[in-house]
Image (cartoon, rainbow, N blue to C red; front, side):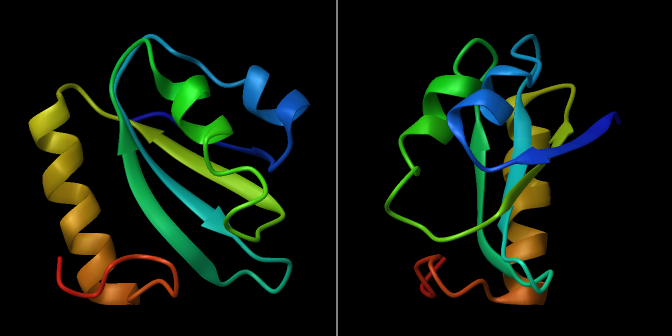
Length: 91
């Protein structure tokens, strides 16, 4: 799948593709994953903007997926492996 990394700000988010579901990570300056989530096709930019000011990070990394179910599986695997600080630990 295609991956892309941009600054975690409005301008960076606007440069992300919106045509497929994605798994995204909000990454700190030190490279730590603070949050992992998914966004549906057509809602990628909107979903990421919801996090601005709420979850600290300097970059967003996305990976486009073929389906939302594929994205959910990948998200669960990443959360289990990295245990991001701002994800609900009960997932």
